[in-house]
Each structure stands twice: as structure tokens, then as C-alpha cells.
Length: 321
Image 1: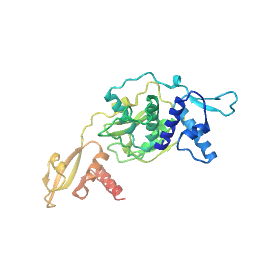
Image 2: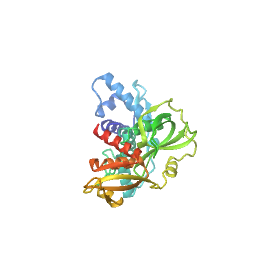
Image 3: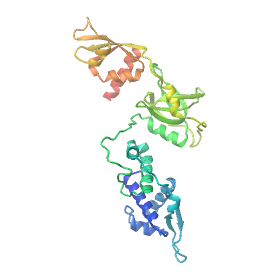
Image 4: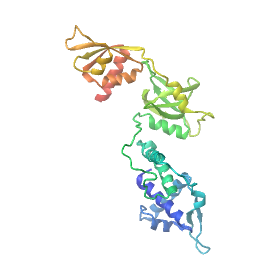
């Protein structure tokens, strides 16, 4: 939902809450800015706005202002709409402000705007002041850079199964999976999707960064059923257990670069290549470690294992492209 549309809907809510009688569409049009002058365009936009307000749970009533008035009017019953009085502590109000701003991905922008609209209108803060948007010195962000996030979030929202190709940790082969997704969650800065894996016929968790290629929707909306009592966060927590750094990489690192690799990797001068050191590195997640090593560019050469070397090459080719 765009900022302009959010402000227009909020204006409608405040107007209809403050009115004691039904207001016609033309009266709303005259009082709320943002509607086009052309009549048909106004009608289409106003119909969309009414539908959006009802989808947000706002009790939009229809009726006539008087017996002689033929035009339908609209109002919002304050009794049906108002929440009980809520007292927020300063830190709680700050959390609400952060929550309405934290999402910056297009897939969640509409949900965040809708939530902010409800909170602002219910609190009577038409100008969006400190009750919902307190001054913030630092605004945290949850990034959703993985290409798989958008279609997976859509699939969870619409209860639709998906297919995608997946490269599990420590494996070079890619397998095709069909998943009935139950939820997408963030844990320790990484995104995961959990659901029923049709190939394994069991619940599974997949890290979004290991999904390769496009995620495709393969079923109609509503065809996925989430088992009662399912907590996706617990599934991901159980799956994402403390890692064991049981894989070893052999690296050639430029002597005057890669300080972190030198610090942790027991370096020794490479007798065959002056100015370079031989370093061993311990890791658990091949794709993550490959991305980390690729950041060093030409200052690091992976000697082994071959799977890690290929993964770093893929990272570098992707950055070049």
C-alpha cells in the first residue's frame, strides 16, 4: 500500500468516525484529497478504497441520511470500531513505531502500512505523531535480499504449494523439492521456510539462501493446510542447532592480506609462491564460507576441497556478472 493511499484511507476513516450521519460518496470525495476529477475514475478508486477498508476489518456501514435521500451514504460506528482504552509505556510505543517501519521489502510494505493505518486511526492520531511514530534515532531493518523470499511469502499467504531447486549444506548436487509452505521466519539474520516436503513426506526446513533458481507456485490458493498447533519458529529453532565446524579448507592467502584468515588459520609461508601463505580454515556451511572467501577477491585462492573451490568461483562469476 502506497503512502498516498494510506493517507487517503486514513482520512476516510477519520471523516466517517467524526460524522454522526451517513455521508455520500460525493461528500467524501469533496472532503478527502487524492481522488481524480473524472467521475468514472473516481468511482473505481472509491470502490477499491471501500473494499480495502473492509479487508482491514473496519466496520463500514451503508445507509441513507434521510428518508428523502436516494443516494447511499457511509459511516463508521464508533462503538463497533473503537478499541478499549490502551495505555502504552514509552518503550511499548517505540516498539510499535519500529514495527511499522521495520519492513522495507515490497512484499510486506502493504501489510505494514495497513497495520499502521489501523493503529493511527484507532488512536485518533490522524497526523501520525508520537503515539505510533515516536522519534527514532536508529531504525533497524530486516532485509530480504534472497530472490526466493517474495514468492515464498506469497505462497504462505495464499496457502499454495511451491517447487524449487535446493542445494543442501556440504553437497554439490542440486535437488528439486516440492513444499507445502507453512511459514517464513528469520533466525540469527537468516531466512528460512518450513513446511511439508512432499518428496520426503515429512516436515522440513530450508534456508532461503540455498534455494537456486526461481520458486514456482504449483497449486491453487487454499490447497495447503497448516497442521493445528504448528509453530514454525520452533521448527526452525530445532533445525538450526549449533553448528559443528567439521570441514577444512586449504587456502593460499596473500601474506599482506586476509588478516582474519591468518589469525584463525595457522598460516605458514608457501615455499612455492613467495609472498603467499598456506592457511587452513575450518567451516560448516559451504555456501556461506564461499561467499566469505569471495570477498577477498584475488588475495585468496582455494586449493581444496573441490566443492568449496567451485562454490567460490560461482560467487565470483556472479559478482562479475
